[in-house]
Length: 420
Image (cartoon, one colour):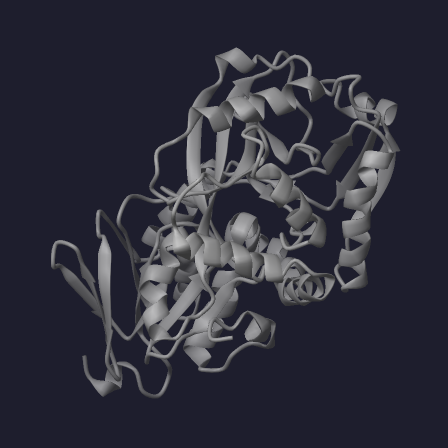
C-alpha cells in the first residue's frame, strides 16, 4: 500500500474487527466520510452482546456502574447464588485484580468522573440513531417511556438519587415519580406487588438483533464488505498500512484498523498501551409470551431486570456475571431472573420462555469506555461501554470516524481516551 493511499485527505481504507453495533456503526460513519471498509468477525453479525440485550436506547439510564452502593451490594451478592451480580468461585488473578480496581472506583468522585465522561455520548446518542435510520438503516426505533417499578416509594429513592446526580452532572433527564395505581393504568401487567414507580420520558427501544442486522445490510449496500468466520489473532501496524491476520493465516490490509471486539478487546489492545482492563460482565436474556401486549419497557431496579416489548412478547434481561466470555450458559442464572421478576408481573407465561441467551458485555473498571487511537500507527479501539453499548454504539462510531479521518480527537472523546 503506497503513501498516496493515505496522504492528503486521510485514510481511504479501513478494516473493522467486530460486527457488533459499535464496529458496524464505525464502519457506516467511515463510509459517510468516503472510506472503503471491510468488517471482519470471528462469528457473525451481532453474534455477541449486540443480539440478546434489552434493546433500550436509554441515555436517561446510562448510569455509571461504579456507584458506591454497588460495592456494598456486590459484597453481599458474593454469598447469594440468586443475586443479580454473580462472581463464580474461581482462581483467576486477572478477574480479582479487575474487581479490586472496580472497588477502588466505587466512590462518588470516580462516579462523577465517569458520568462526565459519558455525558457527551449520552447527549448525542439518539441523534446518531436518527442519522442511521434516515439514511438507509431500515429498522425502526420506538419512542416510549421506560417505567421503573418498586415495592414502595422508599425503594424508589435510590434510583431518584442517581437520576438527580446525573442531572447535576449536566445530563438532561426527564423523570417523574408515580404511584403504583398510575403505573398500572398504563401497564396493567404490573402486579399489586408494585406500589411506586419512576417514569423516564424521552427514551426509546429497538429489536437489537434486527437493528444491527439492518445496519450490516446498509454497510453492504454502500459498498462495504463483511466477512464472518475471520478470527483475528494478530494486528501488525506499519506507517501507511495495518494488517490483521486470522487464525487460519488469512490477512487483510488497510490504511487503518479499528478494534471493536467487545469483551475480547483487551487481548488485542493491551500490547498497544491500553492499560484499562476490559472484562466480560455477562448478561442473560430470554423471551416470554404475554397474555396482552405490553405498552413499553419496564425496569425492575430492585432485582436488576429489564423487560422490553419484543416480537409479541417480552424480552427479559438481567444479571451481571463475571465469567469467561465464551463460557456456557448457566441455567441457574435464568432461573434466578425468573424467580426475582415473577412477583412484579402478571400475565407472563414464564414456563413458555424461548431464546435463552447469554452474552458478554465489555466492562471497564472505571465506568468509562475506550474510544480512540492507541500507541500504534493507524490502530484505533472502540469498546468498554458496559451495559450501554447499544445506546452509545452509533455515536461512538460517528465520533471515532471523525477522529480517524481528520486526525484530530473530538472534545467528546478526551475523557474516554484508551491511553488514559
